[in-house]
Image (tube, rainbow, N blue to C red):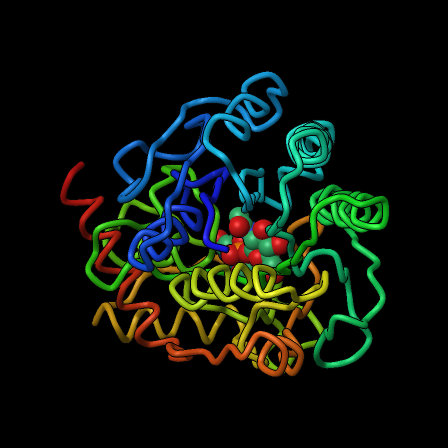
Length: 328
Ligand code: UD1
């Protein structure tokens, strides 16, 4: 029932929080990460193997020798505008890597697969929230690269492959409340991280990308979810599959959103400072608004958010940024 779990991308921002919670739950974990964006010291539990999830020989060897029952696949590129500028990077690292990894899972008989997908598969939903039944019409290569992986998982499961849970992440933010791990990528583009940097460093620049969206204040609206809540979803999904749950797709969010201006106001409030903000034109590939419908995940995974609190999320992100800033 409780076999070893392989987490790809487990040294990265979200993966390291998932690994931490798996360790706290007493699960045996192997982490596969090529450290392109991850950090060795972000791995608080388990055995880290440095390598690529696309490496069929390496992965087959790990799956067999470590007796892996379940794979959580988080290794990916995630930056929307970068995917527009360099689509092959995304189809390679996201789609082709997933294909290789699934080939290995099929060959070695992995039972369960948890896939980190994205709200970007919805594109620009018509209604105020996207449910799992909202049509998937991604508007950028990143979203398409993930949607192709979703299709592969479904097709492989129909052909006898692993049962799966696809988790469509909305906007992930914040970090470990004890401040041990966080979002450390130096060139990260995430709004809350960039804003926390600007609050601490007068030399850092900050722009609002688009003030003419059809949203209440003209700036982009996103559904921010605390990384600890998201990590917990992975453990719930694993338990669900291990207890015979059928393959399923779940949105990971809180069911309501904040605009860019609301986020920046919160960062200024928590930091107790002001910072200068430029207004720029829209960023390529950005939808106006993305908010998660969450009825399904609450009902079927028995998951409830524990930290639906933007102020607290921002406080953890700011503390982490102070820690990085203090360490140069
Ligand atoms: C993020 C994720 C993406 C995921 C999506 C789900 C990353 C790097 N991106 O993308 O993988 O699919 O959530 O919704 O993990 N903004 C500014 N100024 C900035 C930065 C951002 O105005 O300096 C705005 C953006 O235009 C957008 C909002 O803030 O409206 C959020 O942007 P960002 O934090 O970059 O996340 P997403 O692009 O939504």
